[in-house]
Image 1 (cartoon, rainbow, N blue to C red):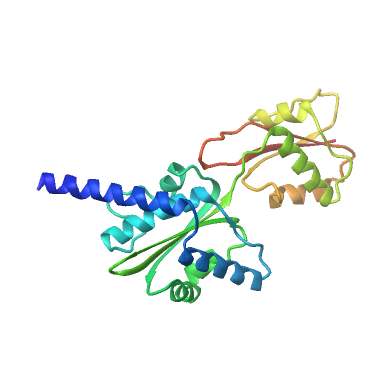
Image 2: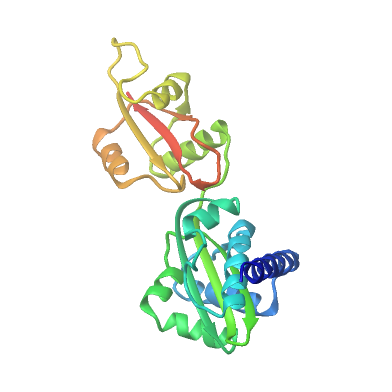
Length: 253
């Protein structure tokens, strides 16, 4: 029995590696159908398209191939890491994640089934998700499909983060915003402000996975203050795969 289990494990690993390596070169016809279909649904709701993410696709391929090998539809098979760990191992960086799985006769029927399921439809049309990786694998049980979604967190330099924040604040009507060392030092502090006490200033610190919008509480505070001068600073957070975010400080004078 021990030898049989070892042979089965070796066969599974060989199957997964070969299938994932081949699929990494291009999308299969079924995967392309599902990718195009979900973005048509988003376009019909005036939502931005999801961008293809190869790290998410890598994780999705391994899971789809594993489900097809065992002929079992589950988000987590026995001995398999959970979704967060699978995406992290694949090298993805994300602020939020979600997953759709299904088995069916064709990608078209799978997509229709997802769109008639509130939870799966909600993932496809979630405005906060920005990226997707899709994989399919066929077995005697049918076509197994996986969609792994995320709010992707790109690796940006400190200067790039600050540039994006300045543009975002300008779009909110805050003019003359500059990056400063004082704001950067304040960003790195857990509390307090790196500004001489002779100056009247308020600091707004926040962490976010998306620098295309301000947190609600920050936006409300900015509207209430009418700043005479505004400075921004970013500071380092982990660049490792997994849950990630940016850290920003806004100084309002």
